[in-house]
Image (cartoon, rainbow, N blue to C red; front, top):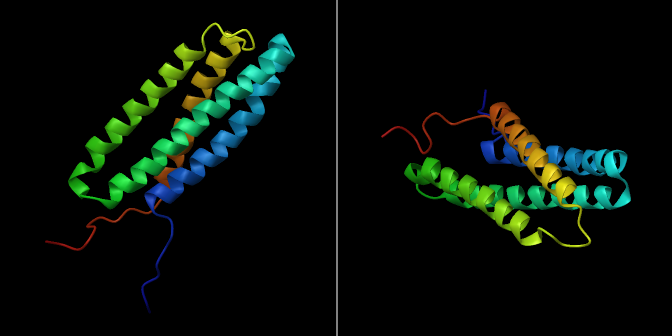
Length: 139
């Protein structure tokens, strides 16, 4: 029997989880926004969900670069990326506050809920992935 290679590495699984959760959130947020407060709220909720999805997706791609480097930097690098993602999301929320075309409550609620949904998707993708116990062999 030969060893079988798998593509179920952690980052690929996490990326799949984020994309699926992001699409679900970007569909659900405008529907909920529309039902709650009308068309402007729906567009604002979609903008909030899409913003959160884009920020989390870029952060996950940054994690791929960090993991390919020194293994000792993976955990601190993941923490820096996560905190950076949350800080960037807060900066966007503050920067867009008070815009006349935006329903701030819908945007903020959708961005926060989308972030939670994306984290759940990321964790589910990570849990379903295969993990090497000794990357690069035993030393």
